Image (tube, rainbow, N blue to C red; front, side, top):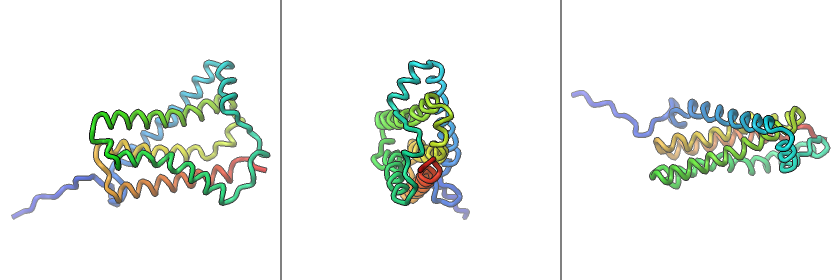
Length: 193
């Protein structure tokens, strides 16, 4: 008698540690983050001087190497400790079972969209308001957006299928490592005295 092939309740990647479809979901989310960043910059640029002045006043960026102390490990760890929760919090949406109700999904989606929009709008607005002068202070941006996209992707996947504990921990570690890399790049590569 042949036994039926058993299927997993939770689709997993080839390694079993990361959720299936994480790579494709991440890539789409990463593209959305860049699109929002560019759209914010274009909006500020199109409105022109009134919005540029407002953005400069709100952000108050001092683009000077003299304002940045020489890099050290404590700065990297402090920055990572600040940014890792910002990237990883969407994993908690599954833990609190936000995906179990339409209302929970709507609230979680709205909250996630707002957080991503606020982050991307600030960067896009800064790029438009300060121009090329801000670029040397943003070498970490591809890694930061990569980490934010990983965190956001975890929720997008959990809406369809809850992550196992192993998958959740794996996504947390991966997201944290990417954000730690972003912190290293930000502290070491930006102009400093």
